[in-house]
Amino acid sequence: MFLYLKMQYGEVIQNNIYIEKIYEIFTYYYNNPIMTKMYNYENHGVYYCKIKFMLGLQYRYIIVFVENDTNNINSKLNLENLKWSSFQARTIKDNYDIPIYNYVKPKSIPPELLYTITKQDSNKNIYTCSEFPIEIELLTTDRVSMYSSEGTIFQSLETYQTIVNLI
Image (tube, rainbow, N blue to C red; front, side, top):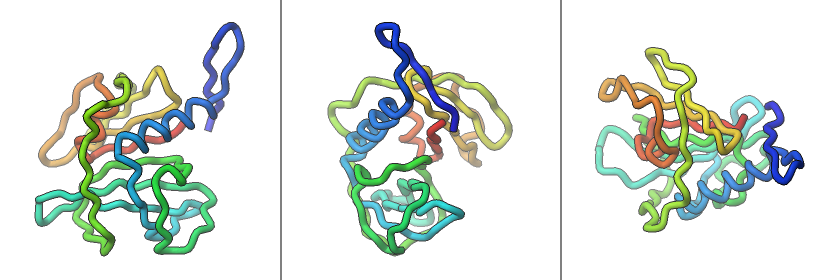
């Protein structure tokens, strides 16, 4: 992870301030759901939250990867307590036996965070956000093979084909 720097009043601000703001925005947007640790992957704990969705053969999840996580499998924590390095809003075929979260999009959405495309291939579009140290991946599917060259983070999250990585 490289050090993301911005200037304010002639002084350098490090990325920790921006990362904490990202956590706050995502927690607010999803109303701080309870996440269940499903497994470990390399040096990450992987937490899932199943989102209520009415397509019988596919399931929507919020998935976060937490570096150096020492919690036990099946631990339950609110999103605000997880310092993730990767956040995913995904539609997948796996049906995990965890509680269903009835997510309702907030009436008051935080300021729109804009992104622009940096790379495109047959599997995904990769975007960066000028306001925060994140990279957004929109995965292509059978239904959606092309996305816009710019947009907002909240638009991308609602596709449930999104990976947001801290950089």
